[in-house]
Image (cartoon, rainbow, N blue to C red; front, side):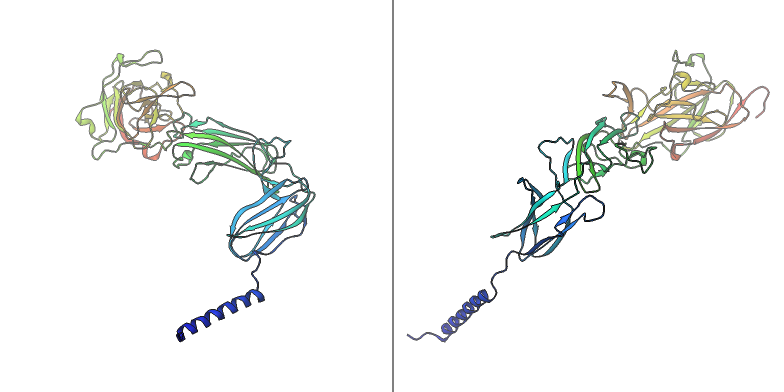
Length: 463
């Protein structure tokens, strides 16, 4: 039986391929996985003096592999510089200053976690291992470290207080103090970390210590960024990370916990009205039953309900009568706002102040205030934002003190009165309302709202 010419041709091609392949193996055998590897110079003094501090590790791979670089000292202890790092074929180089993955000697105590550390002085056997899919190759050599021993930049103290805080400018647990104690001068970063999130770096307080003087105690005052007009991080528990690094490159880290609750920017306003007065002013007669002192509360006045009071006309009133106001406050933010002081409906005499009634400013509290040209102080007469029925009580777990809050997105009416019992140098004068965030701000939106011209009539004066 004669073979087809096609079969003969195919057999010939296969034979040629086999011959060529065998020839290539003889002429050019497979290259090793690590084509070259070296550390030069082989002697360094890693002490950050700028002289012989570093060496260069260089190597070439002919195929993709996972690379591990270790150093073994004379007592057999190994130190890791790279561990199973994936690399493609090609040439690589990296500077090496004797700093490897963190370690602690058996007889020493370190307060923080050592992330990176300088190897002790000595002669080391270095090993570069490349592990491919089906092959592993190792190259070794020696390197000497001298005059390079450095103390660790340890973190001997890390405290966070309080560990649970509410960055919302209500004056209650608004800030958390983070104190860091160092064993020696070093670069320090402090940041918040949550799994899957980006680090949030915290600014350090700049105290009176000279800029060139090292400080072993560092202080971070954290308020969530609310004081700068930013939204705080989302509520939740975060890891506080304090990390140091010295000039050599050694790194030490220590962690603590911090929980954010009820965080947010407080946002409230005196609600502008589409028509009529935003601040309603009216006149009512005074009764002795309204008198309020620090020792005894008087009767509360009712809010003005005369439709004529919605106008913005100037007001003429007799000396000794009550200038009654009414306005609406809205908490348009996502967090409750704290309030304090006299309830709506409280009547002040012109000579009285909130402090006269035993109600002093409270940092973070919101109050409605009334002011006049001749009042003598800023918003001397103040009322809390909401009645007992409209406010929510919250207990501060740190102190056990109870505080009042207007819930988020709530809207309330606030009213009260000032007895215009004295004629000052300016008559008539303007009176107006404001919404005060005590010891924080009186925003432009909430200052000098609804000014009204007020004239006090006496027997000896004419309008």
